[in-house]
Image 1 (cartoon, helix red, strand yellow):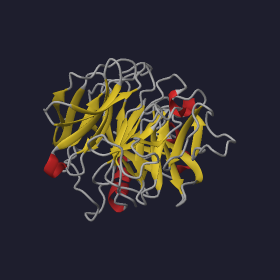
Image 2 (cartoon, helix red, strand yellow):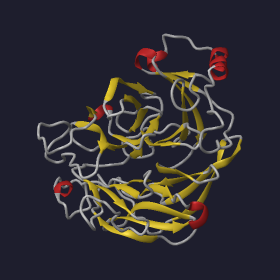
Image 3 (cartoon, rainbow, N blue to C red):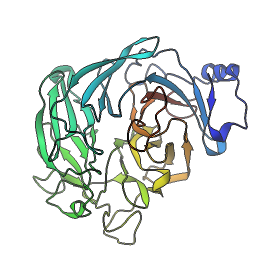
Length: 386
């Protein structure tokens, strides 16, 4: 079945045209020379969505359904994905095997340490770059009194490596990913107080950089401190471009959602400013949107572009960026309103993007198949470029 975005309904798209596009333009898996192997995908049910101005199209394949607020996605070396469910505390394995319903989803384990409430629970997940030898997975999770980062081997006990990250009903952060330098980065939340982000002694409202033992990484801005950057309200997504530039989403501010270029030791302003300001000591965001159009979480690279998945905005923003980290042209909005609230967004081993819906939570209106994991392939740039 073909479903067109609201912006594209004036243009008819036939099944034959879609098939021609997917074949003639290689609108699908990338060339074999790209890193990693594609998962064993089910037969696609395509949703073709045009961006504003028709500059970009994205084909959407539903990979898994019936999940409960999937939060983080990370890939194992064999192509399977590990997915966290915020409210159940479960780690799921999605794929690489498939059946008539999509990729096979299996529960790996449920973490008893997780105490979900509000937007806290089992949040980010990251797979060790040395997983083939150490079999280690890292998770960001909430307890009754704090947020923590822990490590485990699958089906084993969680070992906390960082504790004392501020915990509140909202703005708990949760981003977790390994950087190109091999160190683990985590995005935390200000925990709604408005004071933690500017407090150098607090882990709240920061991006942290650490070793796999939870210790401050070498060359951090302050010796023996985990803090890499400060002045954040709520960081739920971090990523790196092919040229190793770091990006992070910023949500929870009253007026503006942000996408920031993250640099060592910079202060990103919260709670002194909401969005861009005139203080030369603070880093201005690369892009802002009204909070109703954004409240973005996941963020991922698409060659020389950056994509962000939004909760309140219920869309994917796609931004072309220059080498110095500025936006080129006008950001495009894709999939607006078609899948509801979008949370996770990660680069898959085959060069496509995987996203999750987050409709089985407060503010969501779940469809019968929600929550889902969906695969995005762009018509130009990134996986399946034409």
